[in-house]
Length: 71
Ligand SMILES: C[S@@+](CC[C@H](N)C(=O)[O-])C[C@H]1O[C@@H](n2cnc3c(N)ncnc32)[C@H](O)[C@@H]1O
Image (cartoon, rainbow, N blue to C red; front, side):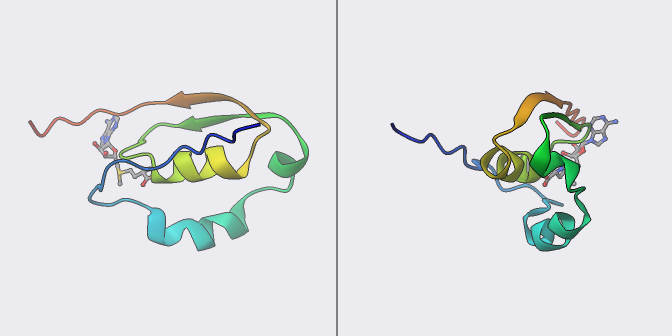
């Protein structure tokens, strides 16, 4: 079976890629053991979202939001 890996496709000011190590230590054990919904109100480039999608196959739903008013 082919494994599809979602990857980050944008570089974003304020992206949290460098903080993944620290964020990982703060995640509750329950998200490893149980199905869960991931909600991210300020998704930006989705650095954390894409990392979560790869790392936690038991993520059942994703709710994201983004509003970029600098255009
Ligand atoms: C620092 S970035 C998010 C980084 C991202 N969570 C990651 O994984 O790297 C913050 C984002 O919040 C968005 N934002 C700011 N104010 C917002 C608002 N009121 N509603 C929704 N998104 C907003 C910005 O456009 C920006 O993309």
